[in-house]
Amino acid sequence: MPGAYREAWASVTRNRDLRLAQTSSVSAWTGEFLFLTAMTVYAFDTDGAVGVGVVGFLRVLPATIALPWLGALADRVSRRRLLVGTCALRAVTAGGAGIAAAAGQPLVVYALLTASTVCHAAYRPVLGALFPSLCTTPEELAGVNAVRSILDGLAALVGPLAAAALLAGSSAAVAFGAVALLAGVAGVLAAGLRQEPGRPATGAPAGRARVVADVVDGLRELRRRPRAAEVIVLGGVQCVVRGALTVLAVVVAVDLTELGRPGVGLLWAAFGVGGLLAALASIGAAGSARLGTLFGAGIALWGIPLVVVGLVTGDSVAVGAFLVVGAANALVDVTGFTLLQRLVPDQTLARVLALTEAVFALALALGSLAIPILVSALGGSGALVVAGALLPVAVAARWAGLRAIDADIGVRTDRIRLLRRVGVLRLLPVPAIEGLAQRVRRSRIAAQADVFRAGDPGDDFYVVESGSVAVITDGREIRRLGPGDAFGEIALLRSVPRTATVRALEDTELAALSGPEFVAAVTGFTASSSTAEQLVRGYLTEDGRRQAVRPPADPDAGPGAS
View 1 (cartoon, rainbow, N blue to C red):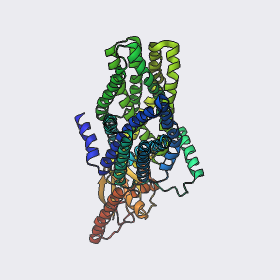
View 2 (cartoon, one colour):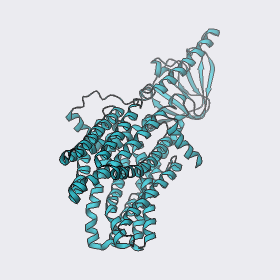
View 3 (cartoon, rainbow, N blue to C red):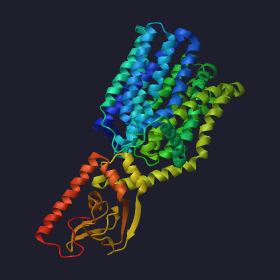
View 4 (cartoon, rainbow, N blue to C red):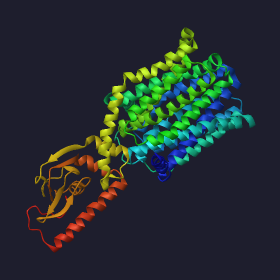
């Protein structure tokens, strides 16, 4: 467990791009929590409770409508540039809102606040789609998501405190200016990211019709990826209950316990503390192959404490329940996000994450609208029991699907570990290595049978899973390869026939990748392409020296290793 913690934090601190991305995220989300507080206070001071309701509507609906379109755009253009662009627009609109607030123009303020919210809506799904390209192992990706959850928790604490200080010492206009500054910092940090590698150009213009088609394709992607859809459906159910909890927190504090109105803040503080502690603990589970069942357990734990509060009322019980719910929320966030990043191909990941955010936002709104009806019908305690029981029941109904996700992830993880032992594949980012792992074919070669012969066309790249093979050239065995070793790259990378014969020395199991898939993955990334070129050059130089000493006399002979 301590090693997992060190590895997760080290993955952020030693990787320049991850360091910049996480710091940018902290700045953006601190600004968002500051923005939310300042916006609500400004609306209340200007138009009372009606104003708060209006900005709540303006905050949710336009951003929810825009999210699928922004996600589709992020799958067609540079995600780094889109981050920079949205942060810049966020800075301009938030700064403009501050100027309009100082000038006493509330309608202009509301319009700019709405535009600013839409700009920020793209940040989380776009950054989430970019993270896998910055990581080299699934364990690192899960650890990075855990660190992100921790930093988001700190932003949720610092942002409102900064808003309180600015509102007490000056005005909402100054607070909006601070949001603009933080958005600008986030954009500058995002601009420092290296261009994400290996995303093929679509070759089609990003016009309105094309973007509509991309949004539709995002929905089709979920049909093609039922395991990802399973995660989104369960996450949506959890968001319905989370939306209900915004109302139930008041019911618990005011009607069911002696905490009173100040107790609402205490309950949400307990929620935040639980989330922060669980985010820290989730780093230790970053390497788990049971992300599906952990995700389900987190969702079930979201509901069970609410049932307990409904059945056993009391101040300490309520605070403890919100602490557990906050912890469950962090577990759901880390595991759910990581699952979607691993289950959805990189080419459509941004639009799927954006659609997910839109679904979750609508689910939150549905929960907050439906729960007053439930409270009116069943009372506060009954509403808590029903809302809380919904989640463990949903998890129980989909438990087989969650176990299937674990099985899928486990098989893929084993294949990734095998591929990671190959030097030319070791530095590939997560989306590339995940894609290769899904396309691995296994084959058995009997002892003394040839995998291929010199002069054969190059078709596949091979990794030895068990057994051993000999590389034969010039009538001699020049190299022996065992588990974790690979061969076949020279013919593929140089577009030449096989340069040597490879023969099984014993019954051998091989993992094979098609030539086009191997070449596309390796040459799409600078680090892996350079490693492959050095490896091939080394083989050819070594075999060239060998031939200079003893000219080839065997029909199987050739100048290289494979």
